[in-house]
Length: 207
Image (cartoon, rainbow, N blue to C red; front, side):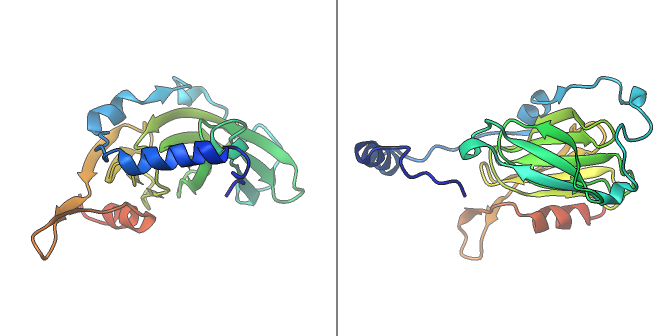
């Protein structure tokens, strides 16, 4: 985690603590319509992308990704850096809006990967040209990201709000939405955070 010491004075820290402890919690909403409306397309026609890597690499399995979390994880200089594992040459960088947290690769097509940031945005990355082709906001935090074994779907969960969404892996369009809440054994309504295992479980269920 970044070092925060010295960023706030003692008085500012006390004011921030007072604000956090005195203000009532407010529910955060981000539903299917919000996710759909947040989709950004950077490459309109992916069919016109080159059919092979634009850099020298023996095998795409040698590609390594390093999360550059940026300055205090707030988005400044936040990027994913890709290396050729054979010679450690940098072959590309993908800038993202917040600190990148996790990456998952398409199981059948080696040109595609998916990056999720601490801020809840998912980027579809073309590993051949080292560029993001589209992105979508699935929530506001949470590291949950999983790609189905057939490469058709992505499951992405959030801590804020407590939700999981299934996306079309090709378009990043949302196809199914889950509010992670229900009644427990004592009859109380409870919510749950979404983890990577939650996404894997949902993707393993029959459609």
